[in-house]
Amino acid sequence: MTIIAVNKVVSIHYTLTSGDGEELDSSAGGEPLAYLHGFENIVPGLERRLEGKGVGDKLTAVVPPAEAYGELSGMQPQPVPRSAFEGAEPQEGMPLLIEDDDGNEAQFWISEVHEEVVFLSPDHPLAGITLCFDVEVVEVRDATEEELAHGHVHMPGHHHH
Image 1: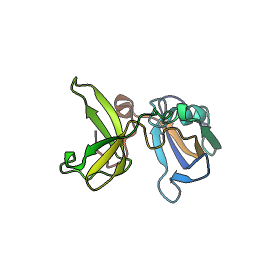
Image 2: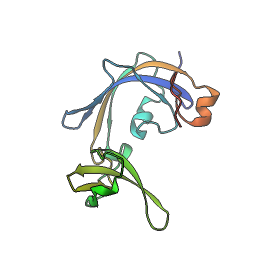
Image 3: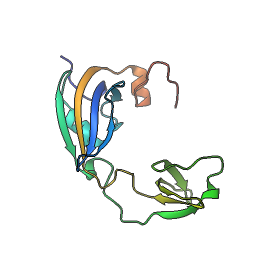
Image 4: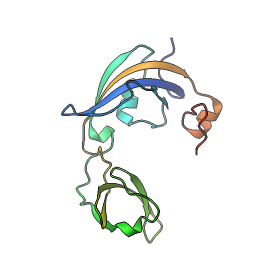
């Protein structure tokens, strides 16, 4: 039987809940999530716990913030005038890459959207949260050369880079 290891494409069904039991995300009723193992396409803590599993295996992985989306930075969200979002509709949880005057890029997420102002936080919406994944392994296969070259799974009919 094929087990989960680096360079395998793994399909999982999962339900993600927060430490207090709130459901955050789930693949139930839809397509399983396919990812390329060993490339941090999914949170590192879940990837580590899936290593060595096989098709039909079920597990509950409790992943602390340090192995998921990081601890909270403690930085306050920064207000940005909404007019800065020309042509884009700002939405809570949306990621943004912001370049500073020195050309350094930093990742921010929109934490609040108001009529005149949008707040940007350096923290991922799930930062500081212990994540609980209920996972069932559906398929494990070898990645194609193209998938390995690009570092992610290619779904049939999707062409985006």
